[in-house]
Length: 299
Image 1 (cartoon, rainbow, N blue to C red):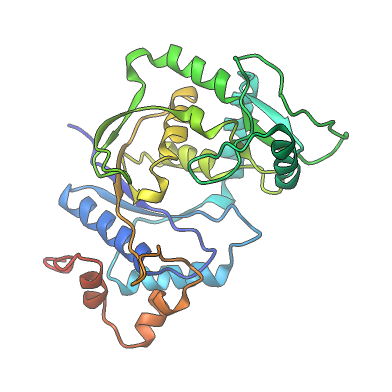
Image 2 (tube, rainbow, N blue to C red):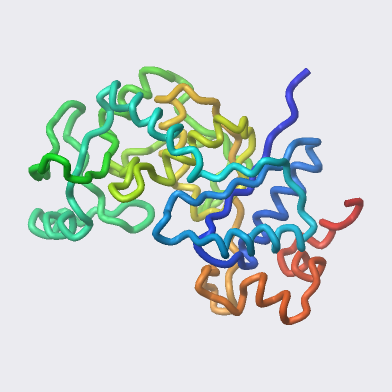
């Protein structure tokens, strides 16, 4: 008998949940119910500079108010830093990551001098990948003993090794739609990200590394999330290959936007669930706004 599929909703307590989060959570919860699967809640609180206990408390309250239920205990990333360090050690042993002391300002200055204005899918400057695997860092900076550094993935070397490890398995399965309508089997193209940071100097890990490790340790089989994270899936699948972790099925959905077509933000307090609740809206009305009118049928 195949194990029950595992779905998860994984918010970051760096602000209040808004309608976009409600859509993602409700969609994921309904998918788990329809598939006879499990629904997990994970709190992604590695960024101690932005995450706040009061936001986590509000997240839990808002989700319970929406009628969602989840398994206990809730996994909080801040309590599992050793798991991410173990993954980093493995990548370090494979000689796939390197220390980088450069700040964003220094990278921008060097990129300007070199005329290197290439951007990653999120719009950030690409840290220049090597011309070929094994080449030295083209923008090296001296590292002072004891200095805090970021750890970057040597993307050229990592991609070459991962392709050797997988052969024809160089893809991920998209059951939703990417920003350009992508659906079905998607060939990987992680090189567009350059040498991404896998461990920030101030945190010791990153979203990319932590989410991949968490999904594997929690047995997540289905990842439901917004289209803004579609491109990041190329990094996540690459890390799954390198760390020999299972490949989930991905379902990316359209983002909820305001009347001007802008994606909702945690700073838009007028669209937060807390604000809408205070205005007297009901969970059913929130679900209807999200286009999930029948969520409360048979709950």
